Image (cartoon, rainbow, N blue to C red):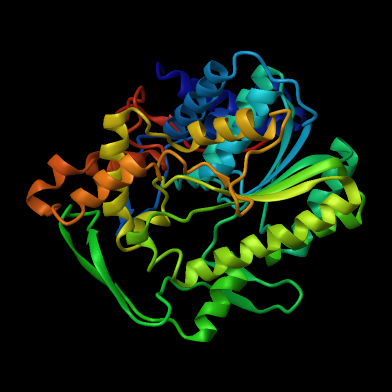
Length: 437
């Protein structure tokens, strides 16, 4: 049946995931088994509130290929760098996925990705992150790059041990550890306690302007003031403790190369988002993340001549950001302004800059006075922020389409799940049961 390149790629990926059945059944039986167990279906987007509950494998594959193409065009010749082995924690979506693509296709690094994603089950699609990683593995095999993945709870000791074994047996040591995990909950493996983060203000409640994603109406939303317990819970989930345990565990087992580096991702934003970000419960977690970077930097510098940083990234559309009051409206206005100025970036554009201009640069990363890598430099340009601030009090439901790129925000949100992607025919059936090798 004819289809897109991404759909054909997905079919080949499914075969790689079932080679062991072919070995057991023999060629003819395996082909018959595969054709009977690889359902094709037309996948239409299904949402519940601001959450998309399914994903399109061909759309996800097309997104991965687009990112690979961007890296190739932006880094036509691979920089000379000592980076060889890269571990990305939270490697299936967003900045983590883009980091893996930028280091893999931009530098030729061997990449090991860790994530927690749902595989397909019958006619239920896999999660978008799972399809992203299937496509990445398939592209890596095609292009002669080494790539491995571990699918499981990265907060657990079991996954940390499994990853350590993969590194020891197949990589030797790692040069770069990237922490890009995002989760609303975390179970501490040492205490057994499950912590839940809260999106709240600190000190007093906050009410701010926002936009409803489903209806496109501009209104207000309020968040309560957090208790100290809620602040502590948020820090336990989104702070630096798990990052520190990952790096310390690798160091204790001799799995960090000489000069090894590690970095975690964060976001600060402008003053109008600070009640939610910088000055809210999330902000408390971000302070802990920066403190963790400082302590890890001291240890790595002493033990392996390495370093640790926090990279502050630009605002992009994620499933988490779509649920945060104020942020969708701010991001829609930001996109409008940055696109008009020709300085708009998504995840892959920023991660390509991170790899090319910071991590692979002979001089090392350029940091601000606080020791932060500022990939949000274009977003925080004075002229950009002045225009956004000027539009903020003006934007209402009836002029939203004129003043803000809300359509672009919605498109980016749909793209996260493989929908509304250019080049994909959503009227064609696609194989949804594709699996990681």
